[in-house]
Structures are given as structure tokens and as C-alpha cells.
Amino acid sequence: MKAQIKHQYINADKVSELLLTHFSTLMSQFYEMQSLFLSKRYKLHQSLETSCILTNLIKSTHLRIMRQREKNLDHDISLNNFFNNLYNVQNDRSYLDKSSTKIITIVNSTGVPKETVRRKLKMLEKEKFIRTNKYKEYFWNIDETNKDKFMEITKSDIVQIAKFVSTISKFLNVPLEQKEIEKEIEKQFSFYFYHFLNCQLNWLHMWRKKIKDIDLILIALQALIPTLQFANKNIKIPGLENTYKYIGHTSDPAKLRMIAVSAASISEITGIPRATCIRKLEKLVLLGMLMREEKSKRYYINKQTSARTKNIMTKENIDFTIKNYSDYISIMINAITRNLGYN
Image 1 (cartoon, rainbow, N blue to C red):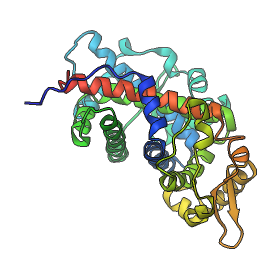
Image 2: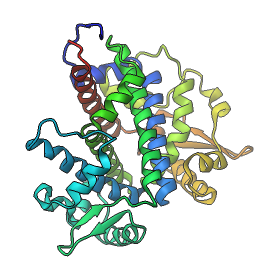
Image 3: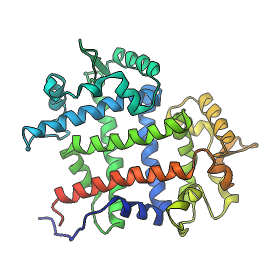
Image 4: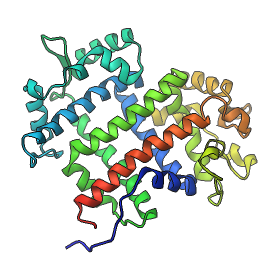
């Protein structure tokens, strides 16, 4: 029997405050989670835009599965029952929110231009990741050729989510272990993944609107992660309004070159071709986010705050990121502690 632990409702503001207080530890782990999430999808589709479009349809599928609880509160929405649920909602129009399957809704949700969405939907249909019906509605599809890939990516997501939530919960004095979080996510799979994918889409839509090329973010993360890991853990951020100035900050800028990243290493991690990495790294230099070491041809975070925070690490972008994921984490922790029997 699980020990009863007194637990109060965790609101998003409390999570935001925690991210500020322990930003080097928590934000580096957060960006590692994001890097793995994006890299796995880039390797699958060779395009994050394509991944965003498919993710939007996947999110809608999880919502339709959850709606089955309108008729039966005990309906099984677990990962083990997922393929049964997927089949049922694909063949029952009573669960269908028709607007969620239309091109214009996908455009609005992802920020990807309409003609690009149309072209990529055709490609996804050809590769059997989606299907259409006579009403010209688009649906996520899993056939025998991509079932294993789906499970591989899903299991990886679950591990990363559980790892991050477990770390934050300990700072909140709610000792949730990673393995028990993983089991809880699998048990209430569609609920947790609907919120997870919705959060990811909001974040990617923000970047798509700000800088158009969301592949840049995946590349920038590879330089940002080691910088945060290297940063002074004792730095105290003086309020949320100053967070953006400290993302990428280190107490010893001269040592940044020691943790510089190369186009080859980024290509290996992300799956983005090396030539493309070089081109996009140079764009990040022009945007002021990165610096280039001429001798080694490696890249590191720009130590000049005014340049680093001008385009990507802006106050608005960082504020949105922290708020978006604080909302998500508070939903996760409150649901998990309730379902696991914590008071």
C-alpha cells in the first residue's frame, strides 16, 4: 500500500518559479527532452513541418479516444488498449470532430502554410501515416509497416516525460519515481499524450511564427544543452522578467569554446544532413544566437547578451516556453498524484 503523502494542488506559477530557481538543472533536462522529441520525428519524416502536421492529427485522435468516456467513465484509454481504441474511433463518426480533420484547422494549429500542408498530407498518405475518407477528412493511420516505429517513439517519449516530471516533483517535495510515472502514463495513455502533444504543438507553432524555420530550433538546442549543463548552478535569476538574459549564460564565458559543437555531431544526433546543419548553423550565427570558432569550425552560444537575446532567446519566447510547459507539468503532476493515491 502506498504511503500517504500530504500534497497540495500544484499550480503553473509554482512550476514556473521552480524553473527559475533551478534553471540550469531543469532547463537543460527540459531541452534534452525537446531535442530527443524533435530528433526522432525529424529522422522519421526528414522534416519537422511534416511532423507537426502529423502530430496535430495524432493529438485529435487522442481527444476522440478520451471522448469515449462520455459514454463509459471506465473506458480503457491505456497504451495496451490503444490499437483497439484507434480502430474504434476511426470507424465511428460519432466521435469525430469534423473540423479537426480539415486542412484549414491543421494550418491554424501548426502555422504551416496551406499549400505546404496540402503537399505534405499527400506525402504522408502515400507513406501510409494518414488516410482520407470520402468526406475529404484526414486521419492518423497506423498500419503494420509503422506499428513498431510508433511504439519505439512512444516508449521513448514516455521515458523522457517521466524523467522530467520526476525531477520536478522532487523539487516540489512530491517524491514521484520515474518508473511509477511511466506506468501511470501508460495506464492513462491518451489523456497524458493529448496534453503532451498539445503542449508541443503550441511551442512549435510559436517558433514557426517567430522564425519560420523550426529546424533551426532543433539545431540551436544542441549548442544550448551543454551550455546550460556547464552554467553556474548557483546563479539566482532575479525574477521572471530577466529569465531570457540567463538562458545560455555562464559564469566563465572563455570556457564556452570547450563545449562547442560541430556540424557533424549535430547531424549525428538530429538526423539533419551535415550540409544542412552547416547552412543553418551559419544562419544562427547571423541571428546572433551562436558564435563560430574559425580554427575548429565549431559553434558555441554567443556570450554577448544583447546579440543572443535579439532573435531567438528573446524575453517573449522564453516567457512563452516557461508558461506553456509549466501549465503542462502542473496538469501532469496533479493528475498523477491523484491517480496514484497521494493526498
